[in-house]
Amino acid sequence: MNDDAMNLRARNKQATREAISHAALRLAIDQGPHGLALVRVQDIASAAGVSPRTYNNYFSSREEAICSFQADQSRRAGQALSARPAEEPLDRAIVAAMVELYTDPEPDRAGLRMIMSTPELEGEALKAFTMAEGPLAEAIAARAGMDMERDLFPAVTAAAVAGAIRVAGRHWLASSSSASFADVVREALACVVPPAPAPRSRPSSPE
Image: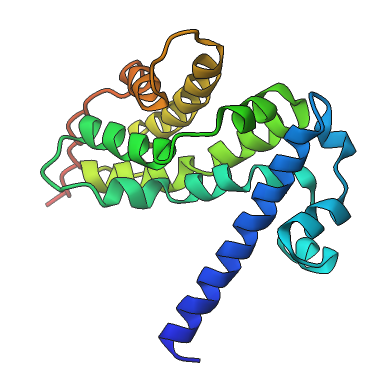
């Protein structure tokens, strides 16, 4: 199989994944506050235009399907930071990368509210956001010239960033202001993203 065919297949799989996820979330929202329990796999598959078997090939639960967009975003966190200009200071690069990743497009309020107000979905979303930590920590370490095994900064900062974005989501839903989600994410990240410390010098090798 050539590269074009492989890329087309990957795009088609991603489109199917997104269609199933969107259908699952819409159906849950339409059912009201306790909509998750009322949505059946058959309904999701039908709304997405796929068979139940295809649905099961992509997702093992309704919760996983609904939160797959957040999971896909989080898997790209390290790539998003690595793509920032090399000369950009680390703190600014992290904020810019995460704002672009998580707020373009701006989350659907009804969908995010459903996820945040349903314990099963909130737990799945927590798992999704946690997926960002490893790739993001590696990207921070590479950018700051640090060693993941010796330096705590990359992993601690990555975990703080993931937590700040979750808090930003809850705050945005609860706020009566007209602030955009991007503005709220920037404010949240400003609380937890410090400039990178200088890399520790390695011990000198004995003569």
